[in-house]
Length: 455
View 1 (cartoon, helix red, strand yellow):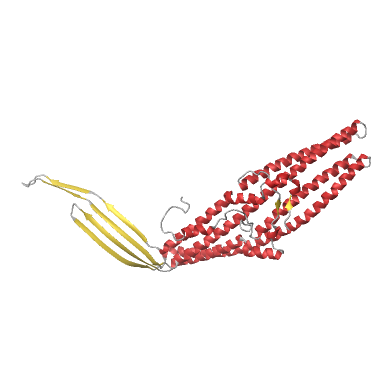
View 2: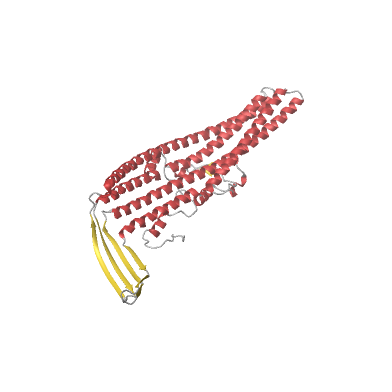
């Protein structure tokens, strides 16, 4: 059951504050790591038309033009008149050549399939980045709430100990307590002031982390609720979901498929290739008054016998080893995901129990403090008893705040360990990034250097 966390410790204006969903929306839109992962998907998408280019013809045009001048002459020889001649020419030519691969050992077909697998790897990497960013942002939100609530408690403790010191000094003035009691009260106040300063530092640090993750300064933050409603009822079901849905596992599988296709691509170097080519030539020289035109078409079959000094064989063997490595990484990812699900699930269960225990501890300690204070007034307790009991009460309240924060964060952690922490499942009210849109825009492009967004 989803429960409000840290609500009683926050300001009554929380209705106008920023909810954890709004925090996650800001992070989803603005986080640079997530935007970089989206750019990575677009880069991977461009690999598909690059691979498809192997099916398409290649056309080139070559145009040449030059000017030539020559001069020759001789003097008078044996009665021959002097000789002098010069020539000028301006030859020009244009050649249009087209080539088309007919068969390349299935290199292009496997390259296209590999590019598609690389796109899937990039999409799973994006999903993993989205989970990381959303979990970090939810944690940052809860950390700010925790540190703010802790600081409020520390301030209350300072007020209580300051009041206790004032009362102790008044009793010392009339001789009811000793100077030692006053010193103990002063020591407790200084300790409370020190913990307040530490709490202020922790809050400033949490706000800086929030700014880093979300991109905006945290204002008033609303009490948060867990996302346990999105979790399965049993650990076994959570583990099964993680094994089938987590992007680390799915990305590893696509990576293994891509590496297998790389083996096929490397093997294509051992197969013959067949291509056709055609060319048109046109040459002219106005000075010499001639024109030349020609056309040709032909086919080329290339059969590798022992090409590249045997390097192709080493490349194939290396690709097979890489494929084996990728398959092992699937097992590694599977084990890591299982461990993360089990660990976060157990921690969530512990946080639930800790909240119940902390609530009981706060209730019991409150009763104890009130009783010890009354007993102190009639001389049945010492000042150290009052100070220790008061300190224990505030420690119990801080522990309750910590447990409440942990429950929310761990519910998000379980969802992330299962591979389900994303904007769609959280029903965030924002436009969800569609990785297929850019893919469809560029897949079949033959020409153009502008990206779909106009750059």
